Length: 61
Image 1 (cartoon, rainbow, N blue to C red):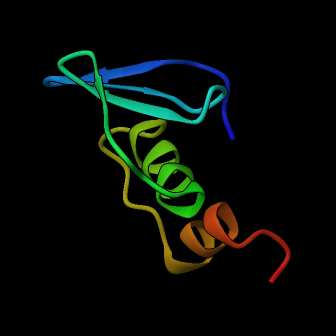
Image 2 (image 1 turned 90 degrees about the vertical axis):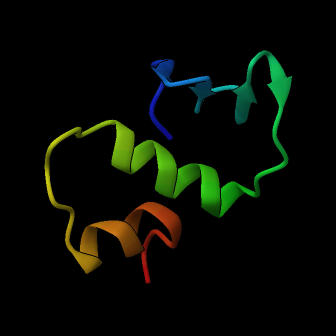
C-alpha cells in the first residue's frame, strides 16, 4: 500500500498503518477494502481500470 495519508471529508486514510478514521474514530475495513480505497484516493480525478483495481487488491493475480 501507499505510504501517504489522505484526508477527504470526515475521513483520514493511512494506508501504511492500515487505518481509516471517520471523525477520528476507526472504521472497520478489511485489507482489500483499504487497498482499493488507497488506489482510488491516490489518483484523484482519474479513472482506474479493472486491471489496476484488481492489482491493488489482489496483486499478482
